[in-house]
Structure formats: structure tokens, C-alpha cells
Amino acid sequence: MESLGSISLFVLVAETRSFTQAGKRLGISSSGVGKSIGRLEDRLGVRLFQRNTRSIALTLEGSLFLERCRRILSELEAAEMELSNAREKPRGKLRISLPLVSGLVMPAIIEFMRTYPEIELDIDFSDRMVDVIEEGFDAVLRTGEPTDSRLISKRLGGFQLQIVASAAYLAAYGVPKRPADLAMHSCLLHKFPSTGKVEPWPLRVAAGEPDFELPQTMVCNTTEVIVDVARSGLGVACLPDFMTTQSIKNGELVQVLTDYTVHTGVFRLVWPSSKHLSLRLRVFIDFMHSQLFNSALNE
Image (cartoon, rainbow, N blue to C red; front, side):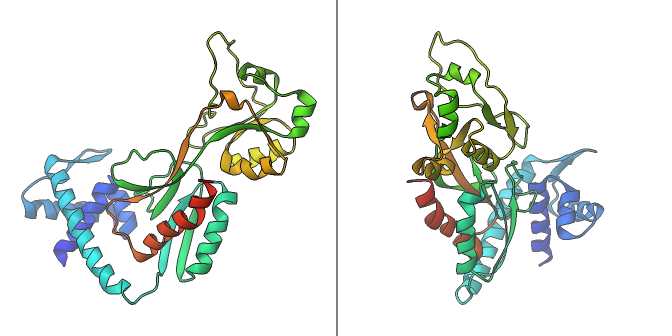
């Protein structure tokens, strides 16, 4: 059991790249973590980490040992789950991070809570790029392709960005016929919370078209605000189709520049590769895939 404890601590330090973060997660001091890793290295007769005053990194031996340890812990957790899940209902806490598109995800979350009342949800609503492992999330929903090899992902659905405005706005200020026309319009722009940079609009500009900049009538770090402002007739916006479909159907918004807009995006659910799928995490992944995104994002 002492060896298993050392292995678990080693994996946590390797994933967080920090004695301090690992200690916080376990409720022990960073010096205590360092001493435990030192004892493990003495027992193995190899150095697992390269240390300096600001960071730590795995040695070659540490990287090889990490893969073995992950498999050991995964098999142990799988064995425990097989014994416990046979009779138990999904229960326990799930820490998840979801993007700030409550109109899309909240109906599914509410239905999930009704279906699995014994699962406790700790939800972080944010558009920033969270560190899934270091911040201790069980699962995170985000757009794009994951670049972290420590993560596993499941594609939940695709979406497209559209240029839209209200009918009242277009009647008052005219319909843009080509991208350069936007220079004369009120533009509602989205900025990435993690970088503060304005998200570019996916406009295909033909050769010979004049250069132009989008007027920054409003810049906001959440698209839910932008869609409300666009529906109110205050400008042109670039929004994902799952946020505009219903408003277009009921006439609140009109899509423009369709011949010049080229975009495809993907929503994915990601979770740590070292984490064996607990029953509560498994049902959450399956539920979000089947109940929400198969209909909302793939219409």
C-alpha cells in the first residue's frame, strides 16, 4: 500500500509539474511532497525529476515510469469500479467546466440533474482555456481540437459561424453585399477571454477587394450578450449557428454575406487520459452526447 501511495503521488506531481500544486491537492506541504519523491527515487535508484528553483521536469526514466504507473493506477481503479458499479447508482461529485452559452447547455444540465439526482455537479462557467488536470476538472466542454496529449476527447457536434443582424437594423442601414461594406456598419465583436484578442470573422475576401477594418462598435467577451444586442437592432454580429437558428426562424435575425462566410467548428468534451471513467463521468459523457448535441449541434 505504501508503494501505491508513492505511485499516486508521483503521477500527481508529474501531471501538475509542481510539488506545491500536488501538495495542495493532497493537503500536505510541498516539502513533504519533495521528501516523498526523494524516497521513491532512492528506492528505485534513478532520478525521476529534474529540479530547479522555478520548475520541475520529468527525466527520461521518469517519463517511462510515468506510463507504467498510469497503467497500474488505471487497472486498480478499473477493478474497484467493476466491483462498486455493479450494484451502485451513479453518485458522487463531478467538477466540470462549460462555455458561457447557457442557452445551449443548461437544458441538458437540468435534465441530467433530474435523471441522476445522486450526482453532485460543481460547474465552472467560463470561456477561458482552463487547465483540465492542474485545476482538477473531471471533464471540460470546449471548441476546437485538444493539443494536450494528457487528455482524451469526444466529438459532440459541429457548428458554423454566421454573420447576422436584425431585420430592423438592415432596413435602417442597408444590407452589406460584400465584406468591405461592413466598414460602414456597426459591428459587435467577440474577444477571447484568455487573450483579450478580438475574434476574426471568417470572411472570404476576393482578390482585388479593398482592405478594411471592422468598426468596434462593441467588444464583449461573451457571445450571449452579443446575440441579445444584435437582436435589439444595434449592429451586425458574427455568431455560432446554434445561437442564431431559432432567432432566424422567428425573424429576429437575418443572415447576411452567406457567399463570403466560410467556417466550421467543433465542440468536444475532454477529460484526463489518466482518469479511469467512473460511472458518474461515463453517464455524463453519454448523456451530453445523446441528449443535447446530437440534436442541438447536428440539425
